[in-house]
Image (cartoon, rainbow over all chains, first blue to last red; front, top):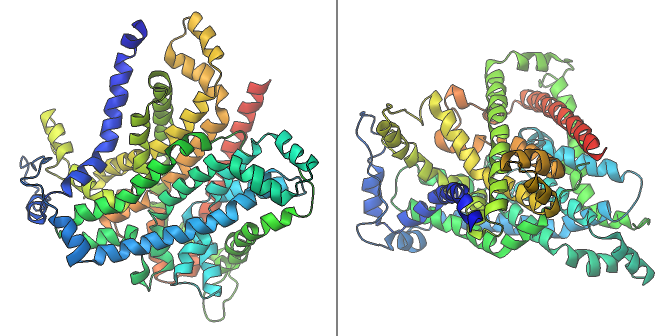
Length: 284
Length: 284
């Protein structure tokens, strides 16, 4: 019992921080049940620069309303259209990564060959380089292949997300070597070893990879802005949303909630994987 | 460990994409930064770099990006370490606290910007608190004060992932190490620094690198709040790159990218060296 009381201070601080962190998302969800008119009136009280005139803090709607969702899903489907763009990018990129990255990391962790550490270190370097740098090589190739202003411009460079490759490799390096050797003695080939030992054992890190890649794909901003300059119709919602809500429409919070919802699902599915999947032994 | 040529089958898809979109054009692109961009494409040596490094907008963007990363990365690193060690001690299985910090990482920037616009409004909750404490209201979103909202948004988004990486590393530290510390009566904070930190060095290093490279994405929040030409205090390198890229000035884009790559890689080199030295010391 003494232990309990000693932790009271930290317990309170941690919980307070946790609640504060959740607040922006929670308030977005709450506001999505205000009627569009109420949101419009409320948002109109922004940007008043008279000192002392404060905005109300609203957390309860005058009347719970589903009107925002109705308009969003039925009357005006603009947000929905770009939401589908976002979903298609996310599906294409994650599916591609699932095909490519576990294989790459298997090769870089369970095999020994000349140049292996060099390639692995190259991936770490690539992970460090920010978009401001990698956009140049990407654009050069995309331009040469005539892929600028097509969906491929966003998808293809993302398929080899260095951070995912790095996490997968780190995890696979921790798979007990004895297991692989046992597989070898059973004369299971490298392919069966991959499918029957390494892949099943890597489930947590693959779940982590999916969740983190999803976060990446659901929040694409720089890539569409640079690679799809002429085709704004191909932009994902992550770019368009702020333009659509520049002029208050009254349905932006339902839009935002709808946009956040898949992230919630992805988190719920993969939360345990994320706790187990990130294992770092040595960055080299 | 396998030693067989079959490894190239696994490496091929990933490696060829890496080579095609990153490595080859990265090397091939160097020549753009050395040409004058005219029809004849004359070789001009380092003239582009000279022009770039005397361009006030480039210098402004670079300075802001570096300053923001210098503030944000260490801050995020310290906060997530404290938060993770608190969680590990107080809530060994704390699902709520863990979820509430990780969700922001998955929520799209453009959806959540609506709430931030309210929070930092001239009449919004933050100024309300400041007034209540006897201060005077600040124009957070339209002046050089914008750095604070940007930093808060950055911390909010990235705290979760960094905390989780720390947390899973801390959990792997043998409990017996702490028991002797408890007997010696070492305070929790000192215990974290002198026992936990050396044990989780690779993860701590990864978190620092991640925090640091994520600071280069601060552009997103700035872009959603104030478009392509924000206040001078938050004009980032990505703004400069996007604006010259929109003018199809490939010479300046490539020179800027390679200059930035050099800076980032040098800093990474220093960090890498420090980490290697620290881990050697611990192992001895």
